Amino acid sequence: MKKNIILIIAILLILSPYSFSYGNEGEHRLKMDYKASVGSVDPNGKTIKVNVNGMVCDFCARALEKVFMKEKSVSGLTVNLKAKAIKIHTKKNMDIEDNIIKERIKDSGYIVSSIERF
Amino acid sequence: MYKLLFLVAILISNTVYCRPVSYTGGTTVMGTNDSDRMSSHIHYSPKYFYSLGYRFEYWKDKDYVNHFLQGNYLLKRFNEPESQANIYVKSGVGTSTYLEGTKNYNKSYFIGSSADWETQRLYTNYAIRYTDVDKIEDFLLHSGAAGFAPYVGDYGDLHTWILYTFQYNKDKNENKLSHGPKLRFFKSINLLEVGLDNNKDLILNLIIRF
Image (tube, rainbow over all chains, first blue to last red; front, top):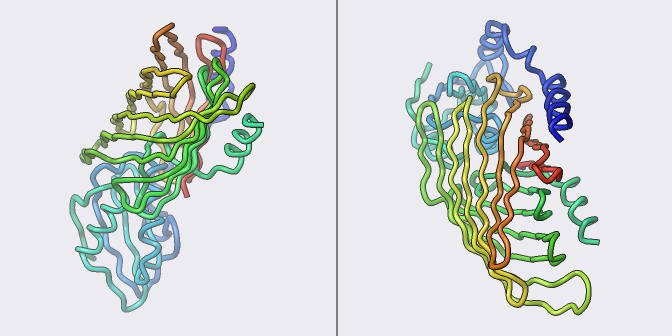
């Protein structure tokens, strides 16, 4: 019994991407700046950074994609799980108001900590 | 037949965490196997604080099935900079029947509550549920898990958790405790848990949220 449990844990850990998760911070930041997690970054659109409280889990944070990508003004979304922040990328000449952002974050299961516009 | 239905539910499911409520407009399907039961649950969240759905359960020892219409309500959520915690209440009403013998359908219901807390490194949850199945049994079920993530992945990575889980089923005739380690993996909208309990029964949970 114990041998089986240890064997299963060992196999699954070996198959996990543990060793690939470190050492790519720089690459990650680069991706944050130029590539959206979902959708695209419109060079003529706006980027709004939102710090989000409660965003600790990748699986649950998928809700943000589902909710924000339904907005007509949004071209893409970048999620930074470690920083607990997202970047909302809007389409050309379009914007999304703070109260709408707060409502969509709430719909996703979180609350807004702060909003920064560039 | 019901085992086949369960396997089909697992294979086609695109669902949620162990969390019973999704985001506004989200649909969740879950499949679970442990030493006591096999179950599947599909629910839809009209708003981020409640969901409505259907639950199917096959209880192995007494060889019967439950069909529930289930409602889940988020009582309180604590969104903090480094953590999130939730308290839910759940209830279901439906019918139950033995798989073998007379196919009489009996009334059944359950009420329960669950709570969870997690950071990017630590996770714990606890759930309690009272179930009354007319002419078959009534019981109180406690369950929970606690564990940690050996690494913190970026968004889009495969995430891994090591957890220890338990389930304590208390009814009039006997008390049954099962416990054991399990591993949780999730990537994108897919979540898989696999483990073994002290009865050498497979713990298998598959969730996909869409």
